[in-house]
Length: 170
Image (tube, rainbow, N blue to C red):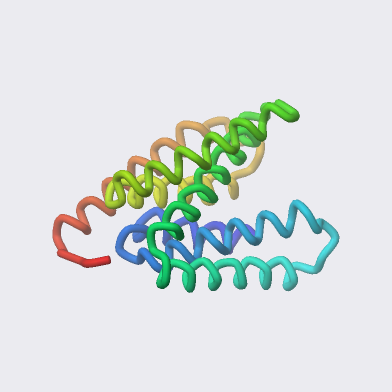
């Protein structure tokens, strides 16, 4: 599990914009994997990974046919996932109020990805990559928030420099 988060986090952090379809698949995988772990906690790891792979594939297929809807959905899932993860890292127990923040994060993620696609994809994929990497750190690690912000900045810088050097098309 830690290795999967490190690999996917690193790929999203450095290449999220360049590998847009892979990024969408990874976001779908993360959402499906996390949902399966939360809602069906006693399943074998292969089952949870399978759910993640299926959700990732479905999200990519949806993206190919209905790009705007898929980007909005991907942004929503990513925004909701990030807010939920931030609440967990900060150890905030908000009960039902957490759902409001998670839904607001999802709505902001969807809006951000659709309104400013290029920048949104760089920032959101950097956030997701940084979150996955930070989640692999031990719970006793004192500088998770600083590490998270540094990784986000690093991801945006790496992706911006790559995009400036190459003219790629979505």
